[in-house]
Length: 185
Image (tube, rainbow, N blue to C red; front, side, top):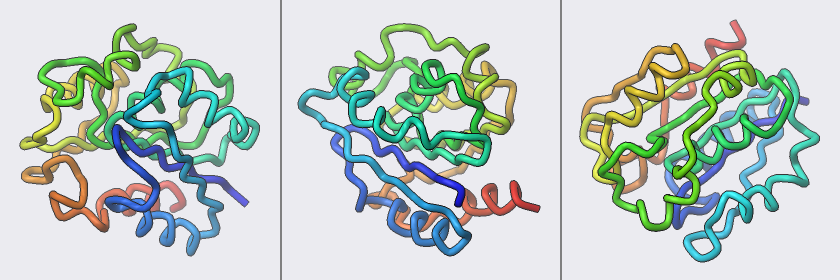
């Protein structure tokens, strides 16, 4: 059974936004879905989040899908730098890479201080999908544009999607699911 992971962001949890909906849709497609709860915002460091992730690391393989929302996307990039396994696909939704303004920069900074090793990251997933909005209240859309450029992939710029969270109306995310379905065709 293939595995999928969903990584939440700052002050986030497994039952928010489009995560429960995506988990259900992926399970219907035969995936086991894991949504780890990371410490946030207290003790929110890459090391603390890696401690939560490590028990699952052995599950990563060439069939694994990983979804990172907001800071969960930056964390996903850090994991791809560390884990020497190529996964099937990485989905980065409203992920910061350090281009200001970033609303939660005080808590997110430990994940963003060091530049990302995009060459290594590119070698660790067969496909990358990057979603950003033109009106994200939490971060500069330039984060998505530059990340797409660094990874050599197309940016899925969604007008008016805010931060792809419940406050922006994102309890489902059909465009994301379409990308998943496109991988299996």
